[in-house]
Structure formats: structure tokens, C-alpha cells
Image 1: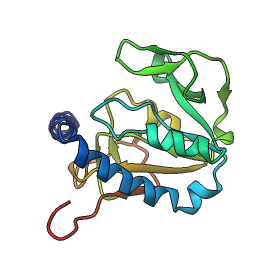
Image 2: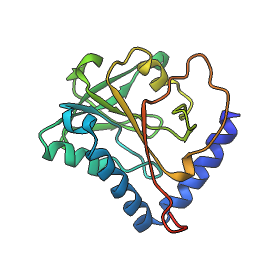
Image 3: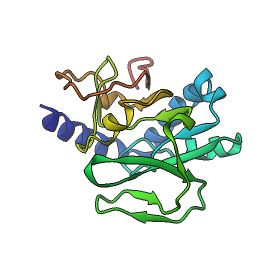
Image 4: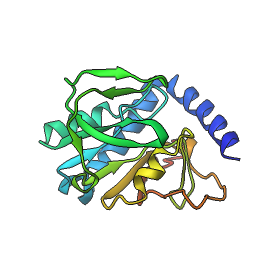
Length: 185
């Protein structure tokens, strides 16, 4: 079930990414909602991803955080589904993984309890905050004992899917979604 959902949503996200002006406008609106939250305003250290082109573009989020004096950390993955977060500031050297994901090469790791806000990626989302990711289980493992705030930024193409979560699936606490306005996005 998750495999079919993942395939459909990735196709829909690819279609959306072919409309860059519309995608940028939607992302800007959702980011503005995030920046207004108490969680964002009170966070000192924010974990996020370095997005790929079909995903929600995290570069404006990273730039805003740095502008506000916040610290950004991004994930590095390891064998056996392990993932940790490392310092990032737009100038950090990056290396590409075998999955095409960019990761920092520094050794400035952040312990989970030092991350105030984690922006959790996903492919598809249920209304309860459960997510279908890319299939590695990295975030569910990481979130299993993460105590900070979690948010996901979710396009309408990613919402409304129903599946039976497994015992290992961890929902995000908060989702910011785009709203339909006047019959359009």
C-alpha cells in the first residue's frame, strides 16, 4: 500500500515541480505560516533537510533561520537506518550520497535534546500526521525518542492518504498545509 501511495505522490510532486512559480508561491505561504508559530519563534536550533527538486524547497527556510540568528542542522545517514543531525550554514562542504542526497561532511553533531524544532519531510501524509517517507525508516527511528517539536510542510498533493500505520510509524505533531482559496490552490 505504501509503495503505491509513494509512487503516485512522487508523480504528482514531479508535476507540481514543473510549475515553479506556483510551487514557489505555495511554499512561501506555508513558510510564512511556519515563521508565525511559537515553535519557530522560540527555537534556537532547527533541524531540516537539504531538499531535492520535487520536495518542499528548504533553502528559504534555512536562509530565514540564519537571518534570525538560529542554528540549522541537517541529517547525515549511516548504515542500519541510523541518522544524526549536523551543523549547516550554507557554506558547509557537502557530499552526495548514493541516493543523490546532499549531506554535510563536518563532525559538529547535534544531540537530539539540543534540537528545538525538527522539520520532518515525507512523501504522503494522513490527517493524523503519519507519513510515508522514501522507505528507509530513518525518520521514524529518529523520532522514536525525539522530544522537541515536529512540523511537516505539506502540499495538497501529499495529503489525505489512508493506510494502516505500522507499530514503528511515528506521526509528526504539527502539519502546515496549503489551503484551497476560491476554488483553486
